Length: 121
Image (tube, rainbow, N blue to C red; front, side, top):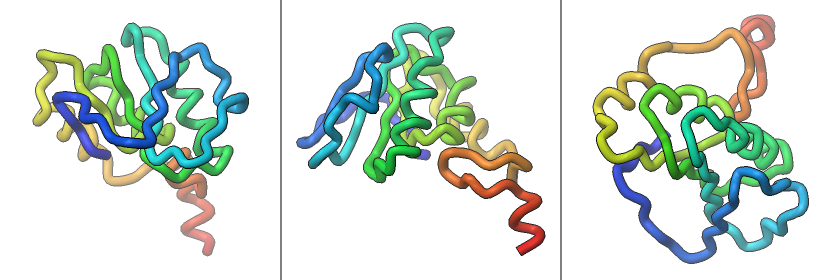
């Protein structure tokens, strides 16, 4: 997961509020979708990211808004590729959060196959 301290713009970016049903949005030609966290306690963008991956979106999904270092690990597991950290958040601490665990037993949006299924294969 890429961590940023500021949001960089690019062409073919779709910014979605966290109350938008992603199933109703045309993803045609989009290379990046920005999902917004208005408060760190509002987790609807996690569901949006997971649903976008289930719908087959393979472009970049970026977290914006009130993004804290405590959230980056869950973001990476639900389908986010990058996160723009809120001002005052330490990039090094966020990177350590991502490196904290070598693996997970459950599947995720990024790797849906659970650990036990990999061991059996």
